[in-house]
Length: 385
Image 1 (tube, rainbow, N blue to C red):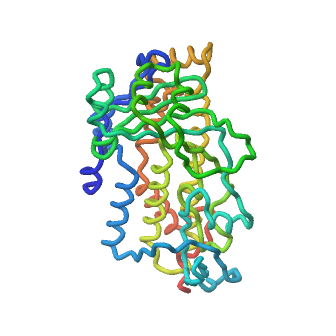
Image 2 (cartoon, rainbow, N blue to C red):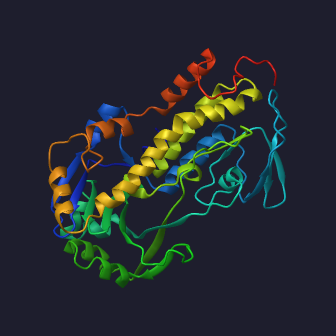
Image 3 (cartoon, rainbow, N blue to C red):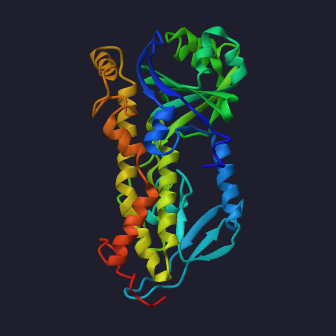
């Protein structure tokens, strides 16, 4: 946490707004209230800054990081019921082969590890949504009187509209302003998924022309911006290879739409659990049980969040009409369980933000030591290596 705080920004609130007028429908207090309740701040950080912190921390811990090492395949030894087999063999695209007793497949949406686990290629598919992304210097936004509220205080603002929504927030310790403009993907389902492309700003202006005029003011002065296809992945009924020597983590296991703001958070929770369990490992024979425990601890939670993100796609994008009006009415009420604004739902917020991944892992290991963790191979007490 000390390494993150100098690079992150603590937002004071989240505001849900009307797509036409920008009027506030619902708000979620953040800041000291959330930090006090959950013993940690709500922080926004640029992905590159987070990666740099993780990279530096890994190096300090003595982790060897090999760049340019694309994965080609993994070969597993024949399984033996009562003994631990030979290490698996990781084959890189360079032809290099590496022996590994435990493989954690954190290789993203186009995961080779996932394909090895399944035995076939399982590619991402179009979710039906796309997004424009715009990053501006915060000073350029602050200089415009109608837009100053987006910079000071450092809140998160979201506009909810028909089949679309927009999210605006600051990054890079407040130096950058980021705008996410999500809407329907007009490509045919079978069209090839292309990398992000730069498109004329007029494409976004046309799509959001009827929205809060301040949105178009943000887009003025910009000539082009990136456009991304939002992809989805099929649900997996298991994450761990039958050998027990490999399991999946993050997007490779549960890639999700961004509508709960939980993609990276769930991956970090995954990492906290598997790292804590591995820290207790005494013998290689325990690795299959550790992978099994990790999956049982993490999979139900991550898959629930993934499903909620799909549901939020509908909730955020109601067309004009009775469903949209009723959503807005419910969002304006005092927080209640089941509120369509998930960040103020008191039950969901506690479940989502109050989760302690380290404690969950320690609890799981405690059960394992007692011989009471289900679906393990019972190798805690085995002396064999």
